[in-house]
Image (cartoon, rainbow, N blue to C red; front, side, top):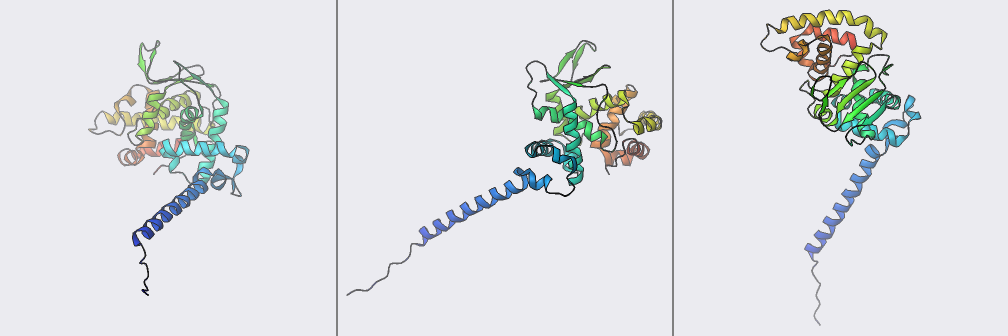
Length: 273
């Protein structure tokens, strides 16, 4: 009688173990993602000091968080309490505004979020973040013709109650967060400047303007000025360009124009660097 043992098929066993590990890893990763990103409760609503966010639907909070995290570099740098403040203010501003699409542009919550986020960014250090006179944002798919300027433009602010955006160019402003070219910040800076809706902002603005105008004079003699030439057009463009530069090239502004940087910090009650 011949006694023998069958040798194990190590290749088959190895394949089975590999498949098991892959499946296990898949479920671990899926569970991790669902608990940290897809589940807004764990992000926002478990805190004892969640504040006004309790009044916003959890899925809506998560949507804002996802869009802002993807597009807005400023938001990504905030700690959790300031993110809550950002989203609470953003939601209230969106509810406050009317959005109109031109040339077939779809206005969904993502579009509204990206249009309004610059206002919240600029006013995070101020008490006021809602407009008194501006209630309408008109969104075009791309650059559009302005009869007033007799040219194609990326955006604009009326003296009445309307803010205009090319959504294509709005997205381009978010795509490169350190070139000091951000359409959203630029146009919303115009609206804030025109309205003077915050008392502290209005009180501090004359001193800021004096410092900024001195910087424009210096620009004529500098080979590498901190502000682009467009800032010299008028006082409105000066402020809008300063806002873009302050948020997107703060370190360079602080190095090359420390007086202007400090004036911006004082005006907006924020200190990026």
